[in-house]
Amino acid sequence: MNMIFKAFAKKLFGVKCEKLKRTVFLCLVVFWGLYIADWKIKIAPSVLYLMASAFTGGVMWQALTSKDNAASMKNLFMLPFDRRKFVFSYVAALGAYTFFTKTVMLLAVVWAVAAWNPVEILASILCATNAVLMAAVMYVFRKYWYVGVPWAAIAIIVILFSGNMPWFVPFCVANAVLAFLLLQNADAYSFYPQESGLGHAGKKHVRHSVWRYFFRYMKCHKNYLANTAIMWCVGLVLPLFFRQVWGSFAAFIGFAILSLNTPVCILLSCEPALEQAVRFLPGQKKAFCIPYCLFIFSCNMIANAIYLCSTQLLNGGVTPATVAAALFFALQSAVCSVLLEWFYPIRGWKIESDLWHHPRKYAVPAGLLLLAGAVGTWPALVPVLTGLLATEVIILLVGCWNSD
Image (cartoon, rainbow, N blue to C red; front, side, top):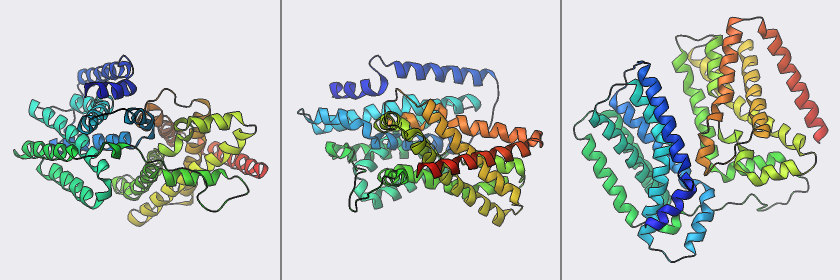
C-alpha cells in the first residue's frame, strides 16, 4: 500500500514534494498576513463546514475525473496488486493532494479572518475528510447516481441546519465510516477514467470546423458543461444580491463575475497535443484563435443575457447602454482569455484541477473589475470603450471572412 501511495504522491506533489512545500509556505504567509491585519468577520460554523465540504468535494471530483491519471494507473494495472490496497492508496493520495494543496488555502483564509475554537477547526477538517471519502464513493458507484445525489443532499442539509448541534461531529464520523466501508467493496478499475474520443462517430464531414471541435470537446467533458451551466445559474440569481444597489457599477461587477468560466478559457493549456498542432500548422493562429474567441464570447454572452433578463424581471432598470456594456465585457473577457492562452499558456500542471484553480483565472475578471471602477470614476472613457468594441468587432468579422 505504501508503494502505491508513493507512486501517485510523487506524480501529484513532485519527486521531492516541492508542490506541497510551496503550498504550505504560501498558506502560512496568507494566514499570518491576514491574522496580523486584525481584519475580522463573523462566520457561522455551518458556513465554515459547508465551504470546507463543498470545496473539497468539488476539487476531489475534478481530480478523480482527470484523464491525466490514466497513464499512471495503466502502468500499475499491468502489475499484480491488492484491490483494497490500491483503492485506499489512490483515494489517500488524491485526498491528500486535494486537502494540502487546495482546501488548506481556503481554510487558511477563513481561519485567519474569524475567531474559531479548536472543536470547530477540527470539525472543518473532519468535513473536508468526509467530502473526500464521499466524492470517491460517488465516483466509484456513479451509475447509482439516484442514491448518491440524495446522499449528498442530505449531507448538505445536515451541515446547514445542524452545524451547531452537539451531535454534528458524531454524524460526520458515522458518515465517513459508512463511506470507508463502501470503498472496501469498490473495484479498483472503476477509478480508471473512461476515454471518450473526439473522432468521427457517425457522419463524416468534408470540411474541418473548429466550432465542431469545441462542441464535441464540451460534449465529451461533462464537467465543463456543468461548470458553464453553473455560471448561467449564477447569472440567474445574481440580481438578488444587487437589488438595493443596482446601477452601472453593479452591472459591471456582475459581468466580471460571470467571466469566471475557467474551463472554456484553458483549452490550449489542458490539451498539449492540440496546442502543438495549432502552433505547428501554418495559418492556425487566425484559424483557431478567432473561432475560439467567438466561442468564449458566446458562452459569456449567454450568461450575461440570463443575468440581464433576470435583472429586468426582479429589479428593472436595464437600458440599451447596459446591453452594450454586456457585449463589451463579454468580448473583452474572450479576447483577453484567448491572448493569455496563446502567449502565456499554463505549464507544469499535474492534473486538470491545477488548471481550474490556477491564479491566472482571476486575472481577466480582476482586470474587468478595475475597468468597471475606471468607467464609474471617469465617464469620459465610455466613448473610448465604444470605439474599442467597434474595432474588435470589425477585426473579428474580417478575420472570420478571411478564414472561410
